[in-house]
Amino acid sequence: MAFRVAYESGDLGNSGHSFDLTYDYESLVMELCQVLAKTEGARFILSGFGREPWPMSVDYDMSVFLEQLPDLLENLESGDLFGLDMYSQGTETELEFSPDGDELTIRCSSRTAWVPDPATERLGHGPLLQMLRKLAADFALGARTVDPALAAIEPFEQWLTWADTGAERKH
Image (cartoon, rainbow, N blue to C red; front, top):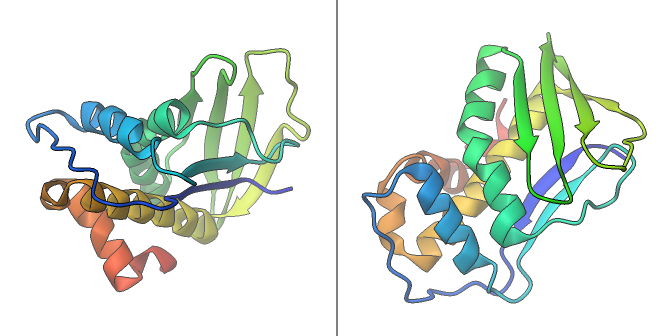
């Protein structure tokens, strides 16, 4: 089973929730994930390393992943090593993304009794970027649906261009 990460919005509608647009990105993500978690059918999917799927929540686990997503994308695009810390209780895992030309190695280190098997997975650089950009675009679409004002701030504005133009498919 291969590494996969995705967000499925479920039956999303405008919640009438208004966000304080002066908040920093991480605070907006935390609040937005709490709102999105109330949507029937919303799911945050993370799988790989012998676990299909991981036990993930939209309100907390997706927030943890998305708080680090801009840095992960930046490091992958520049070819740098990046460690993504899934620090939520019960998950407590680090994913280390090591670019190597057109491919990369993702190493999973657990800080719980769970032992990843396999502990590493190889994935094409382009397909991983496509997957992460799709996650970002789907999340930004959810943000715009919940509060249209979020579409005008970064990184949501950029991520929406990936959804609107299909750029998340490019690598």
